Image (cartoon, rainbow, N blue to C red):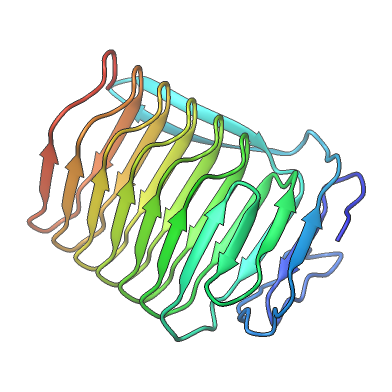
Length: 239
């Protein structure tokens, strides 16, 4: 698939239904019929509109702003089995199926199903917006890194979920919302000048923060039950 100029939308799901009035539609199907490699080569996009995300602590702010640009929507929401997914800065793969390869995508939306899924985020594109929804199930999300100046939003929904963050990109913003369930979030460190927001939801949760990047900002919100936060270190000039 080769896109032209302008802000284009590519929907990948068994019920993809984008229209001129609603380019993304409401995909909630699966990827079972994706049996051959799919390559999406985006072209130049419009500089507007943009989207921003911000993390604030004690009046200190880290904000990232990216172009909406070309959008790639990938939905496996209807899958009820336990699946393993891998996302890198230029490709996405569901275990046992061919890759989806992409270039120059500014907005990437990924939905997994209601099984106990594992998602490894090796990295995300620089200066992009990536949103991951894992829905129901006891899911595991491993964030190895994110792109510089990027935004990553992770919503794990109900279930006892585990999120591991190795690091994040410089000047990036990463926001994790674990919703309901007894969830664990483990953070090794964050990128320099980056922002990290974590909302642990309403049940008993455990947060481990090993360290943070230089001049980074972290906003960590525990829920309304007996939660545990273990803070082992923070970076120089961080908040």
